Length: 423
Image (cartoon, rainbow, N blue to C red; front, side, top):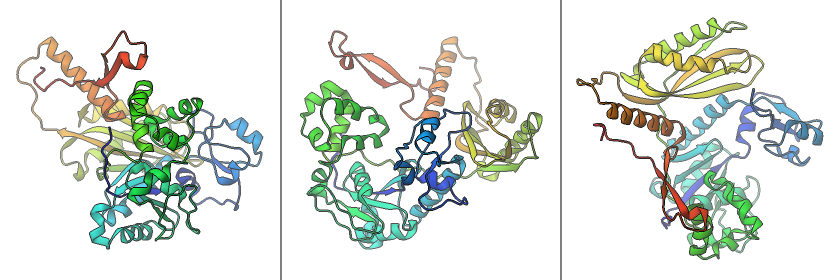
């Protein structure tokens, strides 16, 4: 179960952040229907869409042909993942400037704990005012005793008018563009909201469809269900959804401040093949020579490119074993150059994860075959978790194989990593 706490959490929300970042420097008429074009070489589906495009029935994830059929005047803008990352990191740095330790799993949404900042800024209103001054008027700010409640409050916030909640909850709008839900009113505030709001949590993305088929359409209806019945039918995701609907949530996990170690190089016109490989070799040499590396090995890197026709491309590479060997790293990165979907005008390389110092001494005695196998398994599990998070490598544990409910027959548990001595 989630821990119950009354610490106030602030949610920062930018609607259509990726679309706004991609439109930077482009001319668009007010009210024009705009959507993000598909990723080069990816599935032919539109990304984020403007409010004008939504009036024609265009939605995120819709196929390009259907979107153009519904709105022939739809303007498709090349996606800019590199620009989105840079712009979002800049906003997070602004929040860090007022003392906020932010949690952010994706561009456009961030959370931070206001409790430790009230003494610095003179109370909760002072914290919200400082965040508003740091971020500008485009951001929506919500404040509630839980992350999920704060996100829902931010959805109700408006920059130019007061919030008009559909529930009987007593909301506070002390700072323009912000909505605060008091500790005792969060459940009443969430009750009339649709269960589709649970999709804001990636682990609950498919649960709202099941709930709606069962006739549970609001968070209040979900909150009224008994916990044992929810656990038996939906397992851990159901219990998490129940906690969110009742105003509880898991603690925040603030991000670690990034260490900007990267290089970028301009490419000659129509560069390809050996030219790209030579540029990659030069980028890698520059990254390994940076003082900020401090002799550490590299574990994860990001290779990016800016296209001649506009837009950017970015891919992440996690090494099987942390290394500072330029040849080994170049081999791992060179395979990704073939994925470039269009001619590039510049190529960039950035370190996203460091390993131990490169001077670590190797083993003095030969390893047994069993120890080699365990070490390789540990390396593979570590690589998977570095690339996809702590729950990337799990194992199946049998619990009740004779149960009539598939969810109760087995559970997923973290895959154990052997100790350094191979045990």
